Length: 354
Image (tube, rainbow, N blue to C red; front, side, top):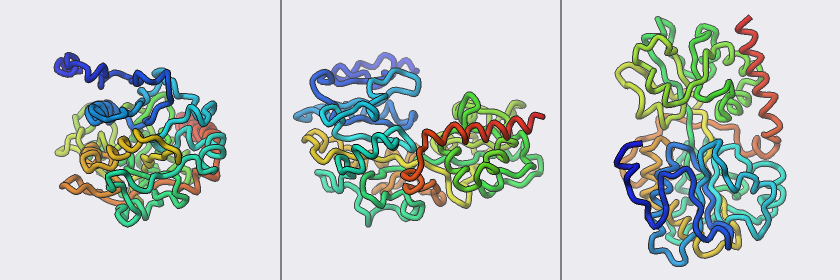
């Protein structure tokens, strides 16, 4: 952390760079807003919320979940929450706990939560304003429970020097070819495939696809290590990397690397929100924040394409988006599916090492 950030005073008792924040009213009422967002934008979201709600009355009670592995007082909310404790508004990413059958059957399928059709400022995304790439990828929820406000895409980053004459992959399917054996690094850790790759790959190519990619994977690295290594001539580097667009676009060396947006579409997860039907007034302030063009503009520049194109110039979408779809999510117990799919991937790595 830079000295400037470390020495910056907290805003109204809020340290926007702390790992977690719980509003002072937490003990007296549930949060108006509970936020789960990707790690690269978590700190900035805290900072902007603190500024946005400075003069709000009544001030929203809000909590942004900490990074993975840190204590989260709401970690089991999907299991133990009731009408008196559930937040007014929730933002979630991808295949999270709120999609589990125990929560969905009780709070989503019954109409307790819904996609807010329009914010108080009237700037919330209507169906007509959603970018066509989001429609074509099936990111718009046909049941109207979740409102997708952005996407979390993954792409391929190639190091042409390390390809050594092999063709640049144009599709995700190309990444499974044995010519890339042992020359692919995935973002992640502990030999665990990130859910963006896991579910998209299995949906498109089945367990055979998991095994084929596993045979090509050399290691799992953090996105920060990937962008520090790709194109740097580091002998530990690989020819191909799979990582979030947020890191690949701005952190890599453009003269020595190539960003590949696969032709099928960048595998992605939706970033979405849903609100109680009986939400309190402060929830409106949060909805206004997420509907504001400034937030969409920030997301676009941070590598998380917003569902509605920003009003001001911003990086364009470089191609299609691809994800398994809401029907896929709603007709499967994703938590029960994770372990066997991870096991199928590990079997592919084991066969490679024999």
